[in-house]
Amino acid sequence: MKSLAVVGVGLIGGSLVRAMRERAPEVRLVGVDPAWRDVAQVLGDNLDDVIDAGDRQAVQRAFAGVDLIVLSAPVRVILAELSRALESGAVVTDCGSTKREIAQAAIAHPSRGRFVPGHPMAGLPRGGAAHAKPDLFVGRRWILCPEASSDEARRCVEALVRQVGGLPVEMSPAAHDRAVALASHVPQLLGSVLSATAAEYGADAAAGPGFASATRVAGGSADIWGDIFSSNADQICWALKCVAHELEQVVRGLERDPPDTAPALELLARARQTRGSAG
Image 1 (cartoon, rainbow, N blue to C red):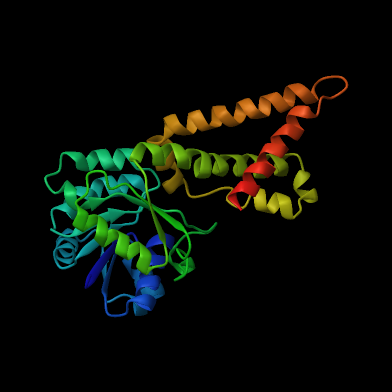
Image 2 (cartoon, helix red, strand yellow):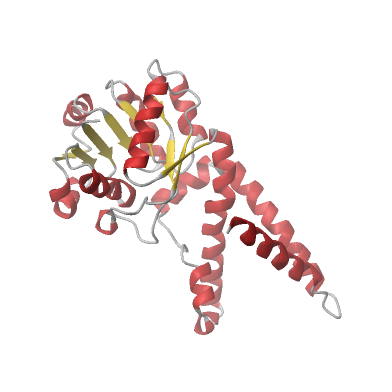
């Protein structure tokens, strides 16, 4: 790969740019973003060119001149840009937080074989290019959904992932969306519930390291999370019901007189076993 365009130069896109500049300085890097002036100010030394996402002709020219396009933006932006990116002749991948809707959008496109849906499992509590880190992806899983991708496109994207230190993992779009509902989307909601409720009742005065860890991801950008909730609503509902069922067993036990702590302790034991197996 000799050239790469990143559409959406925020935390993920910016970290990809920094990582590539550090690890593959010979690759030509183009950033495309609506806030292109801010990107140029923050990452100018890392990019060979920065283009206003609103300049359609300039974006088209940039797409036609690169080997790989990475759509690193909210899901609705990826859906809006996907067809134009595929028409460029480049290999295309994305970093969208959900995969079914994006993968489906490419199915009917004549160049669908050049598209490899993806999702790096990396991030920070604060977004934006100013927080981009060149080592953000090191040792992190990067999920790829190459069911309809050509072998050439898959190899190209896998090479990019490995080049920035990521670990490629293949899943179907459906399996991805169910997995991230439990591993990412519900934790975002639970952390936010804990943070908001503790503040409402003044319990945050007693917050320690455990609370800080449990609420690290609380909040989040409405621009990003609105797309996630709408595009993965069914799987998030399923995951929330799973969690609610577990917690309901604990509530029922503790409501008894005297309190039955067995359900709560059993839940902790299962978690210890799971963490031990993962380690």
